[in-house]
Image (cartoon, protein in one colour):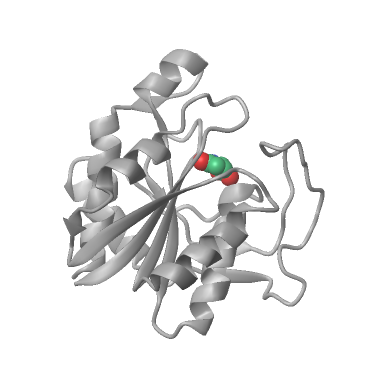
Length: 200
Ligand code: PCA
């Protein structure tokens, strides 16, 4: 059985709930598509999140690493195509707001995911849920973590790495008041459909 490192994020900015956290926690220990899921929750801190993810990759030595992030306002499940070597955006959970910083001075400008994102999108749609490939993960923590995972995975031959942004859950939308939302069960079903593709 292969191992999949699955990560979710803590709440951040104006989002008091992060649905990726609950999905990651609930899938921990499950077997999906030939992978045993090992979940970890990442902080939303530029100086910590990427390093923490790489530490988990080194400790767990997974065959694949898939990170989940909330994209409040999106209304589909969106596997990301590319991570760029930029950190720029609003304050993280420590108050740090980078402006036009590089993630890694010696890193490539960008990395394409090596996960089968087209097949993931098709599988989510087949499960009756809206999905699309996203061509930008932004320049905030999600892009940061995706970039670090792909940078590290390149040195571990054959390791798959990818990122999926998901919409708000209903419980977040009730508290937030102004984001489109999905049920937690549908979000989780969509992510399971994506992971099943990895086993094909
Ligand atoms: N979403 C943020 C960071 C944490 C999260 O869940 C992002 O899209 O960058």
